[in-house]
Image 1: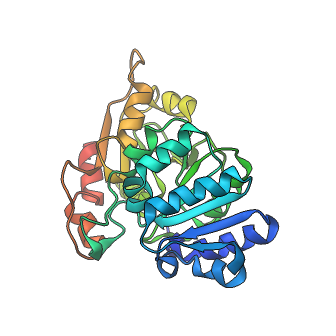
Image 2: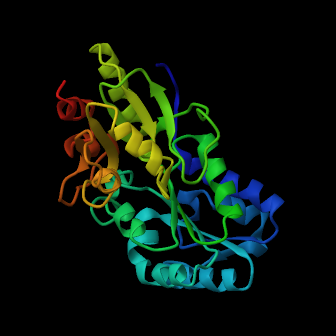
Length: 308
């Protein structure tokens, strides 16, 4: 499969500007990273609806709660580690009240690369999945990012959008995405299923092609909606294929692999679920591609888990 790559983080500002033109109640909140998250584009067009808090993430989340209480639609945009970890207590209160706060978390997993363990967000899905009322979307291409923002605006309640900083295939969406639905990107047969989240898209694509080259026929499933998850599709897949491998730019504890295991655990019989992700360690600084390779996010590891 031939494709160019793109980083979705670079599209955030433009997507929010377009949304801001259509919805006059949208506000964007930043914590001194507007250039890195590209929300400075929104600031240029709508300065009166842009709030800069400086390096005060918990205050920013509280401001988002206040704006939502006033009937507006706040988007708090920051690195995933700050949105999920630094502000978790404030976000928990937002979820408790089911406030209409939207979160866009860039630099998920090891996408921070050189920033190292302090800025890598290998735990954000685990932290976010446990919060009642919070919906989680993981777009894997530009069309899905635009759709995720539209879905978040239409939904009444908190939404967390996990936005890729590293490269993903610049391909159109396979189909129109929905909250609560996964996307079957490829379906050659039932030898295996690779299930991935947005920031692991390129590895999933390369791994699927490597399986094809070995004569294996399986399924490639994009888990655009992490919460709510497409329970029916996952359980149907688990009852049909020989083996499932989850691929995530995240810890194997509490993330995508854990979610799939939870979804199928009460089935009387299902395919074994193997996980490709970060083990129970803190990852180190370096070029994101090499860091991911070191911590097991590579095609060889995927094939090893499949037994190929």
